[in-house]
Length: 385
Image (tube, rainbow, N blue to C red; front, side):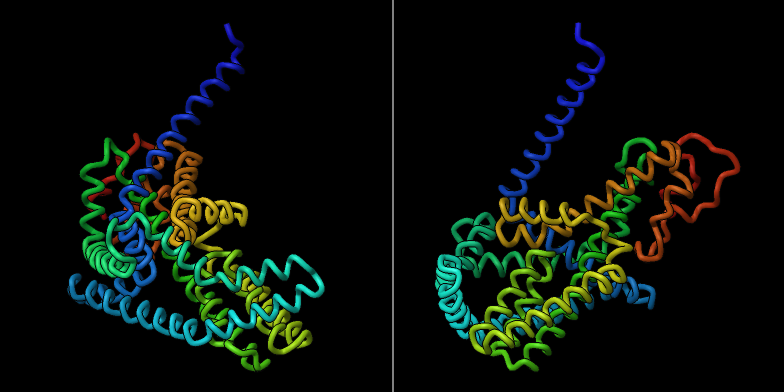
């Protein structure tokens, strides 16, 4: 009895409710099983960061286990060394930065009233805020165990999973071809590769950009003789992994510290340094490094950060953007597949499996067929993985 437009709208509403229900159940399961999910996600990020090194070692005829072990050792050295430098710098300069923020709050309260008072409250309770958000981020990992024990257990498990992800990637591809229904294996493989390439692009690009931002801002603050310059640079490095929001917060802290300790003129110079670095990042580094692998609208990134913070605190903010990049890559590959036609399981649909997709040749190595055939008839697709 309803018109066709109303029936279509009702059908789309039912589909939307089903998809939302599935996503809600998935998020709930991830939160409940975060003791296992968090190390898996961290292992994916570690594999994406140093995956090219592993593939290069394999191309040098090293045994896969040895190559994966060496890559994990490099991962421990890089992450451990960077973490030690950042934590040491923040510990050494933390009290000085907080004291400078309190002084900046007093100066601002003379001109802006309640705004400066609010900043003073935030600076006074900075450690409590960090403890609160850190506890929220790690609350579901291992109930009844201290935060330090949770972090150690998650780190060890993530390192072991990184080793297996790197070493057994070819087995995962073969298992995908064995278990995929019908002729969907090549397309599923292309989607998985595209998602992982997005994670690789985000991790490598963000790390490189964060390092350049931290070095430039640290050098600028040292030239301006701003106290705690190394700690502020470390804060910039960490904040770069939370796009937009992290850069804004770390830059604002640097400017406020300069205002409190060096005066209004030096604060303006610090603002100039921060803006110059942000312009360099937005107009040079981001287009050169990440535009080919991670293409997300800033609104999408901000929504992902907000959703991640609401689910898992700081840890969710750090993990939400690379996961959103992976989902975006998978959806892009899926849209490309359907735009080209449902029968594109052959050479054109596999163009995304480039040289960065691993040491093994992808399904796109097959020659183009003379005439279009049924989906999934490309010869040797499973074997080519």
